[in-house]
Length: 329
Image 1 (cartoon, rainbow, N blue to C red):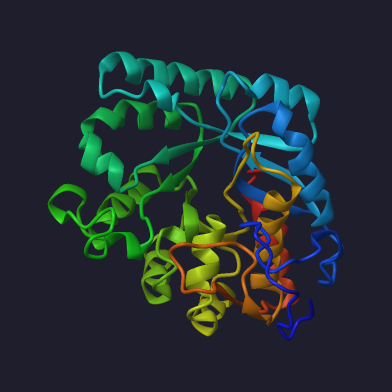
Image 2 (tube, rainbow, N blue to C red):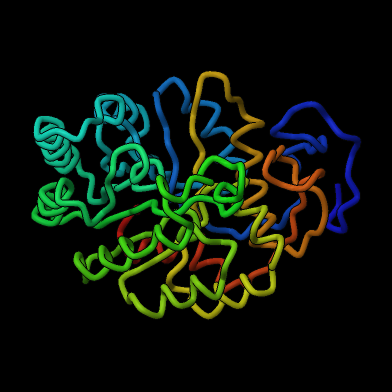
C-alpha cells in the first residue's frame, strides 16, 4: 500500500478488507506517545492483543470505560498504561431509586480508585426506551454526586445521522426525537456543570455537520470533542475533509483523539490495529483510498480521505490536550 491509495487485493477480514500489513503501515512516526481517551477495555485477558496494536501505533496511555469489577485486575496488570472513566453497571440499569443509589455508590468507588472522569450515555435509546435525557430529574442526584466528587464529564448524546433516516433504527421521531432534538440536553448540561470540562464523544455526535460543531464549541468554553467511533468518524470526515480540517485547526485545543475500541475475546491484533491505522491515516495524512474497515453504513467500498492536520495541531489532538485536562498522564 502507498499513500496515493494503491492497495493490495481485497481480503475477507472485516478489519482488514484491503490486505494491509498493520505492522508495516508506512506512516511517519510523530515521535511522542499518543493518548487514546475513549475505549472500552472489558477484561484483563483482552489487553495483550490491544497493547500489541497500541505499541505499533505509538499509543501510550489508554483511557477506558471499564466495569468497576474489572478495574482492579487491569490496573494491577498494567498500572502505567490504563486510566478509567466511571460508568454505571449497565446490565442492571433501571429507572429506580435503588439503581440510582447504586450508581452513586459506584461513582464513589471509582473515585476511591483514582478515576476523575465519569460518562453519561444518553443516546436516543435512553430517551426512547427509558424516557431519560440529561435534564431528567432521575439523573440530577447522580450529576450532583459526580460534581461533589470533583469529576469531569464525558457524554454521548448523538448518533449517526443515517440512523435517523426513514426505515432506519431511529426513524420513529415520536419515540426517539430527531437528530437535532438530542442537543438541548447537551447545551443544558455544559452550562449546568461549568466550568467542569465536558467531552462530547464521537465528534459531538455530529461529525456530519462541522458548522453545527463550530457553533457548539463557540457556545460552551468548557466543551471538547473526541474523535472516537472510528467507522463513523472515518465515514463522515471523509465526506467533507476540508471543512473538518478547518474546524479542528480553528479549535486545536478542543479536540481529543479517541478510538472507541471495544475489547472482546473474538477480537485480535488486526481488529485493534485497524482502528488505530484508520485514525492515524485520517488525521495525519492526505491519503485518499479505500478504508480497511468494513462499514455497513458507508458506500461500497468504504472510503477514507485524510485531512492532514498540521504537526502542531496533531500534537495537541493526539497528546497535549489530554494532558492539559488531566484525563491521562
